[in-house]
Amino acid sequence: MQLLVLVFWFCLTITIIATAAATTNTNNIAKPGCQTKCGNVTISYPFGIGPNCSINPWFDITCNTSFSPPKPFYGSRELYNVTNSTFRMGNTVASRCYDQYGNITENIFAYTKMGNESPFTFSPLNKFTLISCSDLTIFSDPDQFTTGCLSLCSSPDDVIGDGSCSGGGCCQTSVVKGLKYYFTMTMSRTYGRDRSAIWKFNPCTYSFMGEPERFTFRGASDLIDPNFKTRVMATVPILMDWVR
Image (cartoon, rainbow, N blue to C red; front, side, top):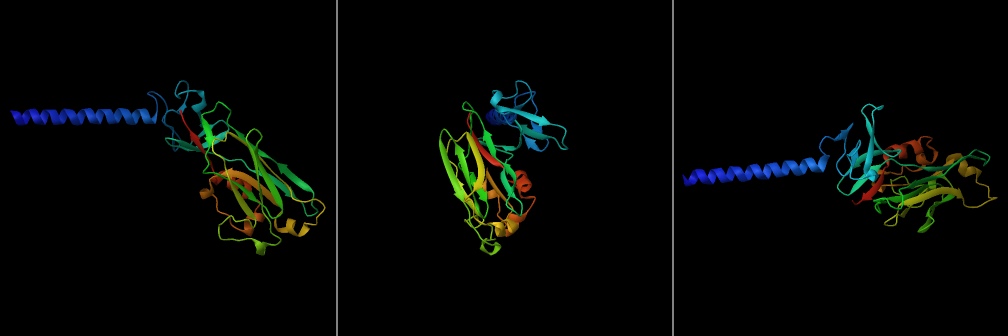
């Protein structure tokens, strides 16, 4: 009889633990009745898809079903994944391009703004990156900081092609903690200087924020790659920190 009682209590304890674990896991995935996935991405609470599925509107996610499979978006940026304290989203890249005579054919700045009341900040694990042999870039939040990066090279032979970003064609600088907004653009380092030889192998310069582990500098080939901007936007996410 005593053995039966022990077995009963053992089974009851296991059932309670399993039920609690199941409840915890459900709460960690999504609110009851709410969509848990968009395509291949799990959307866990406090984020949510649909009315009343997130903890507040800052955490609202849109599932765009025009893609196959569907893709989740935070605002206008694709959302790649969500963890307990971070999420990854799509990138934006500033660019400045020249023709063989030095005329500017493209001059696009880039920025991302989360809002002062937002629970999200740019992770300091990101880096600001410049790809160039003659221009410089600024990264700025006018209310908090301005920093810059300068990369120099006079020929493709000056560019290190081992994947590192060490100043020859590529340079990186740190992201300050707590940042909620940044603006970046590239600009000419000097005026009146003949850089026609550089424009032949480096017609465009680029600057962006993103996870450095997701970006590999391919050396001189990146300086002339017409698809460089598209590649970075598709493969180098911005890492965000969040708190409830």
